[in-house]
Length: 286
Image 1 (cartoon, rainbow, N blue to C red):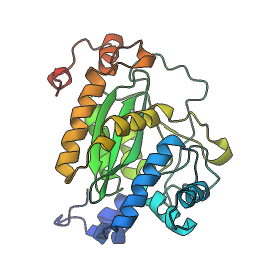
Image 2: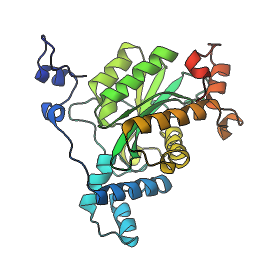
Image 3: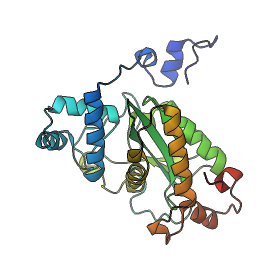
């Protein structure tokens, strides 16, 4: 997103336009120790089973499993992984300073057709010697994954790239729903939606948060990790990308979905969409 060689805009001005601090642009993340990576893997597995565990509960759970950890360490790792409990306490997740948040628009709404509502979320991907982040854009009605991207940082640019691809291939939705994470409250993300005429919806927080706010994409993460991620120990980002691409193609085009009467998401998407012909990429199955 930031172009260091841009003759018209300095790096500082570009960072300001993108709601990024200059320190974030220049920061080179340090690698985690093998012990921390092992804890992150264990936290991730447990979070899929108990997504309501906050820092305190996760710390107690790991201690009961024999890990000598304190809340400060678990808070840092869960924050690094982007994990937040489904029913969280107030102020456990904050949008970036100065970012605008939007109201939740789905309460009482009947979602009856493709492209009426999209949702997006980010999850953590464990690797053999590190970790990556995955963002996906999903159609709420058919559960079809419309676009996805992998990144080694939690900056907003890889989320915007996925959003641009989804809009280019399928047209804009009426509503986009996300949580209040800094990627989804950033200027780059919200401006792209506003310029396309998309209404922005964001999950509640604290006592106002509904446990079902983003349940469909949370289920996608659970399925992906048990059917794909945990069965491999990827060494490189390219290996992870190839593995995720293969599974996403299978999920969209072949995997039966119980909520869709046993039909795959892509089949239902095209049956119920005004568009009658999927593009060539949609027809290919890896």
